[in-house]
Image (cartoon, rainbow, N blue to C red; front, side, top):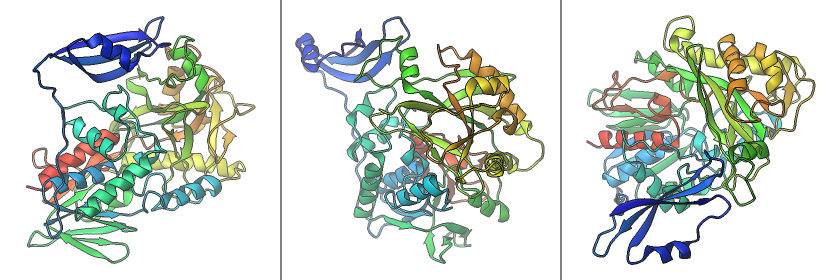
Length: 503
């Protein structure tokens, strides 16, 4: 087997028949596809493996699911990426997953998200963060993690394809699924789990987890239901403060953990296309993305969760707060691009002691966004304070607001004053230095606040067994435990915890 690349101008993607004609007696297998926009002429890059006569093509096959009706149960708290892939892995290991989800199924939760956007009504158990599929189900479905340090990413991607994702995610350098496609995939995963003997319980917010002297856990929900198992996987996502409080109230160990906070930045997509493709973008070519990382005054400032052709949505999980996130559909055909631009916050940046100090800091900023808009006549509780980019950096209130995809609406606000100074001052320095032509412009709108980048709390676990250091048999997992960030890394962590729990 040999590897090689084929490159061609962006204006002319190679056709399959042309490639096959060049293969001769070899069999070519496409392994990666990407766009290289670094030069004056953007290029398609295709990386192939070539196999000669008699050479066996190396293919990946996902593990097979077992029928687990009557098998030993493992309770999985949460049905986001970590919880879903933990449950799928349990099927392959002969364990029966019992999934407890505080929110609704992936279709029913859409009604609560619509009410959140239209009327600012927050359902604390069903929103853009809580419900089947977790926060990732409605944030584009970006699958950028390629690291193999913690597990085999192929196990995640191949299963997603089996449940309905495009095979393109197996070869694209920056694979994504799209918020319009993810609900069906999430539903297919649920059907697979239940058909093989697993259980799903919606509206099952966990309020107590106790371990008896015999090693059996009792997990109690707000509705009074009790579920029992010898192992519990805790995959509750990055916003489940009540779970941290439950563990802390029981004397469990928790740690403050660094996270990142900033704004969502919205540009006209055509500006990003023109910049990234050197003016050579045309219809049919993927909407351009961007990313950057800078060091400003000793802290990282970086773009996060970039959504080409996307929209902005409210992601609050409790009343009297304003939180934003971005999402885009599979076609990424919208008029605007958005991304979080955030500043790294470390425990030493915030005064006080205790594991909740960064969580309290995060909540305080979210509440400040709400209060400013409420005090200035916002028509919708989810109205976001906003400021044009150049005005923000110059410390000027924007006189007008550009068009935005954020449905609850915006109010012109002094974000340079509302944001904490450790965030605002670094953002004001970073925007003019971003190495993208036309990025620093008053056509770009900043909206507050992007704060749910990751959990500000870590649930410490044994590095070998992955068990919670305070309770054997309990496995903190994914973003909510502080061990991953994003769909793929959370799914991989779920797989690892399932393997540990099945021992």
